[in-house]
Amino acid sequence: ASLRVNDIARQVGVAVTSIYHFFGSREGLVAAAHIARFRTLSIQDFAEFQIAIEQCSNVQEFRELITSSVHRLLDSPANREARRVRMETYTAAFNNEQIAAMLAEETELQAERMANLLNPLKDRGWIRSGADTQAFGTFFNGVVTTHVLIEVGSPRIDEGAWREYVCSAILQIVPELN
Image (cartoon, rainbow, N blue to C red; front, side, top):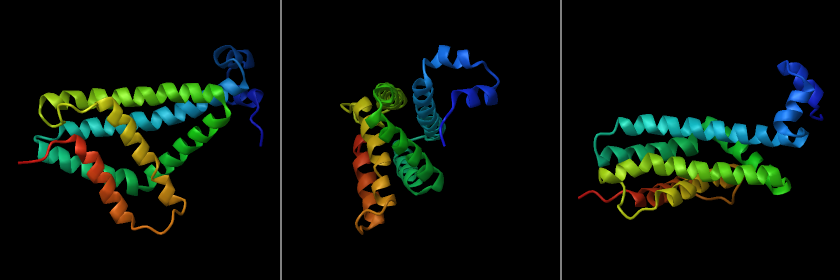
């Protein structure tokens, strides 16, 4: 079924001209919708992680939070759906320069959000002092998103072993406990 601007305008109760004013074209509306779905998912994830971090009282609890968060992100059916939405956005970006530009900007913002979340933890000694938290944010996003390789029928691998490799790699940002 085709997306019709007239149908959308009628459903949301605005003039067609308003949609064209704010989005420029039907393609602009589609691009904005892709990015809005993508952004909403990441904002929810960051908000939940921020609340969980605030509950940690020491680096050991933080390490445990990271491990449990990775398992939740990889195992939860809701997060499988979130990865599907993200993959749809990445796929759309391959064929649409406007979506690609907006996605690049949003991905940069995600990395900045991760850095803003983790940088205060450096002062507490919970993040390695030399860690580039923005690069880590991009790495983390990539690791969680590429779990789709397993979900769509990757060659038979031990999913538990893969999950442990992921946790081990992500925990490299946190100092070892003495």
